[in-house]
Amino acid sequence: MPSAGAVKRYLVDKGFVAEHVSGKDKALQLMRSVVQARKVTYQPTPIYLIKVDIKYQDWLKLEMTHCI
Image 1: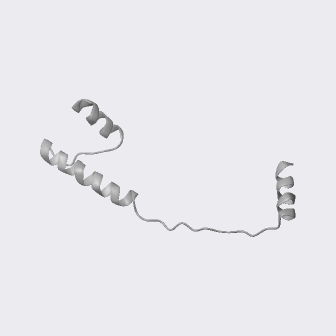
Image 2: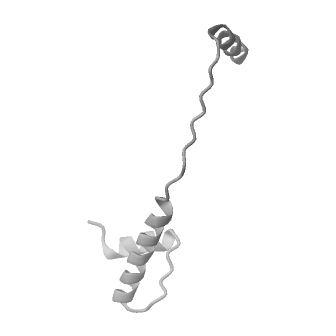
Image 3: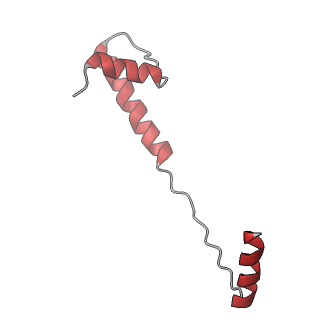
């Protein structure tokens, strides 16, 4: 388990700025920040699939031009 000092240095290095003085308020701020970050990080993003139907002979031509 990392020490409180190590956690504090890590957070400061990553850009966390405490808006409060008391430890309890800082902890609450940190928890809110983590929850907010998870909401932003895990937004569903549509993934598009493109299918290309190509003849084998044409595929070989493309493959050969890639090797040159």
